[in-house]
Image (cartoon, rainbow, N blue to C red; front, side):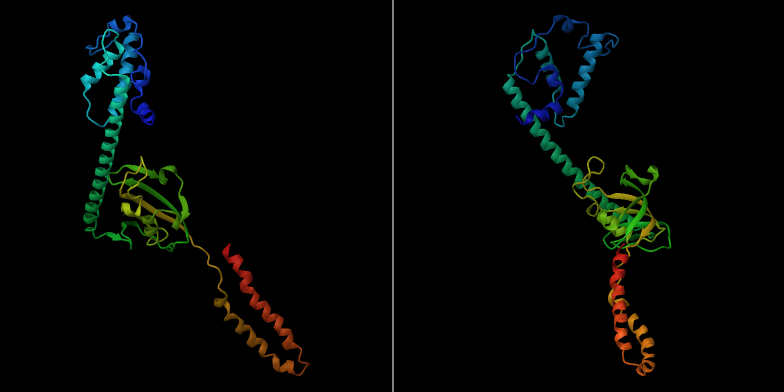
Length: 310
């Protein structure tokens, strides 16, 4: 059934103990069960091999049970373990009834997780709304056109990047509670990327910065990773806090517009026109010779375009 792979993760110990599978109860040597590893003993002798692996097995089961996010009756659970491993005791459920109960457990776990995730996402939204309202009262905090709040830490004097430009930055990223999830400074390597290749909040922020600026910025979740987040590092509706230093702007070189260079052509023509009176004394061949020259000047913008795109 499709529940088994998930149950094998949630309750991995079941496979070891054969408690979740079909078949009869495994034969159990009476010695280990009756060994002086009394279930009531609070201080097992971990130097004793039986105590050591018994306790380790209990730890493994405990880790599995800790992942169950719905109420459990621990005494009943421990009683079922005893019923399953002790051949002198009776198991109270059939294998099919046990499988059905575990399916119900999985459904309850899924519902609980969905409810918890939804509540946590709403809590994150409420917290960032409150934070932005308070942070806006700081007169040193500015706001980008789309709503990123930022504070200048160090002012630069370079150019501001545009959407098509590439930038080089150092940054530290964290959540509202201070949990750091990325740091180019610690890596010792700044990051280079096109402005339009990052989250919307970064694009908005970079275009109000100048080369050399260093800012602290607070990016709303709507301009970051939204409800999806980036599990497990960035939860749903997480506001992101960044320190960003714009080290370099690699401005996109625009292609040469032929219309923009067209006025240059008349500047050469008058100079050649001044020679026309002298040329009129000779056979009227020079005007014809001037035409190829005009074609060459018209071809220059076209030749310059590929070079400009590089």
